[in-house]
Image (cartoon, rainbow, N blue to C red):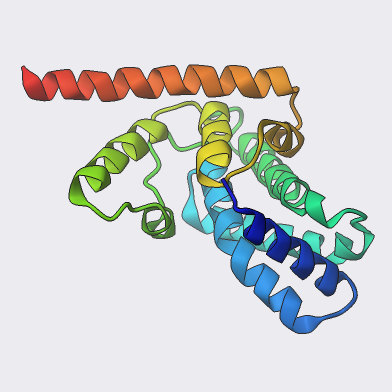
Length: 194
């Protein structure tokens, strides 16, 4: 989870950026851009498209930042903008492909995703690689919910806001995603033993 210090820093950066502090805005963009890019990539499965959508989302975030009344709402508000941009891109792809599936079946993780989450010892790195590989196999909605919860440290209520779904649906996606990852990881372990 995000520490109180990190939340306070984000609250300060958002508040300062809203009143025109350019350095605070630059720091806010630096802190949040990799997260938004990872989120867009998880939703789209295409690195180039994710970069475009994250950039477009930042343009909208910067235009709307002055109207954001509660700085603490920034993560959920901004992730929701990224999510909507990605959803719009998916709809456009689907129209172009005449109903063919727009998401990649087995996207590879961005380098920044692995680097941000690598534990120090090799056994934990191997476990993390196995879990990340299992995460890639999940359907997009479950993958997004799990990643927002475990990798981006959002609460269940924040995830509900980001994905524009009820809290109960978030909990269901988390539960089913965890079970699928457990089964995949357990199956891999069984294969290695036998």
